[in-house]
Length: 458
Image (cartoon, rainbow, N blue to C red; front, top):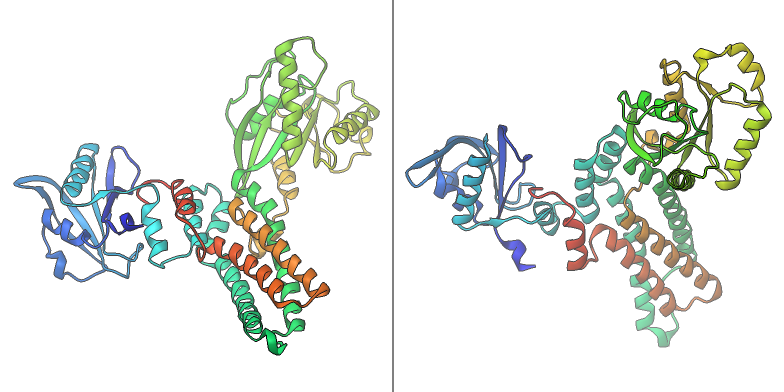
């Protein structure tokens, strides 16, 4: 890990031409390197957490007029001396500036290396560091809310509390092993049982929250299905407010799936337009129909869109039964299209047996807002709005599952035998997996895997 002691530099603002570019330098020699190229305030003796105006020179050549943000260890993002140079965002200027800083002793930062330094210097734990990447990638209010919650330590605090309770008992069990010949019991088994039961419940709730957290992070998959010419592509275009899918009166126009993101009141939905469901001899269209069934099985919500012209309630029920047979337990929203072409009162009576059906006209944008609201109502956002912890990281999910297995194994041992050595082993396993989440237990390979997914400059 010695390379992480190096002074590093990177562009922290988006590349390209713009008003302002931000170049970040962090490390023990950050101030020294900047002082060698900066004409203005004496940075070595300047007050920390301050801004300074001046010029960047390469010898006698003026490169740019800049503003220096100065942070001194340990009061910086990385915990090291850090300089942020705000310059004009010319690719030429930024390129010259980076070359100049490297020439004076810094090296180019790796992806996520500034945040890695923050983790290694104790400014945040591993789960908080991962939340930084989620925060940068957040595109909706929901994903932003989860990332902020984890960045502020809500999840970390929960994990630390679990570890502290288990560490106390692990140390008492180890003490029992040291006095095994005296047959003494330092760890209160009944108190341990209470803690294990509480941990099992807490872990189960967190693991269950991943189902919501994962779809909020990636977008709730919604498959739009129905027979050819039901208006699926028109509906997709209307929801997105753009002509994303080809619309044609010719049946079978959509041959493949089309996926696009839709934000409804801060909740991300991943809309999937599919090929019309029918038997066909067309080889390409048949592949599209097969893919439609695959997407239905992956979807959290299925919009079954149908044109009520010539449709009987019995036929619709048969279609829905078929869908439930293909996707057991499917969350299906039935949507009647082309409401502008039909007498709605007659349609209401005809399909009265189907609760929560939405009638729309995809072509004329009728009741599209009602459809969006219905989609929103089909998502369990109560946990998100309640402020409860939500897990959206697959690595955390896996570690929590392993922790739960170790906790349950400890509970079984408590019922079968009070053997101190076996109990201590299982508790150590639980501590190991919890430690992997926050970074108390980690490896270089794990850190490389996590931080390599970050952008350079963060």
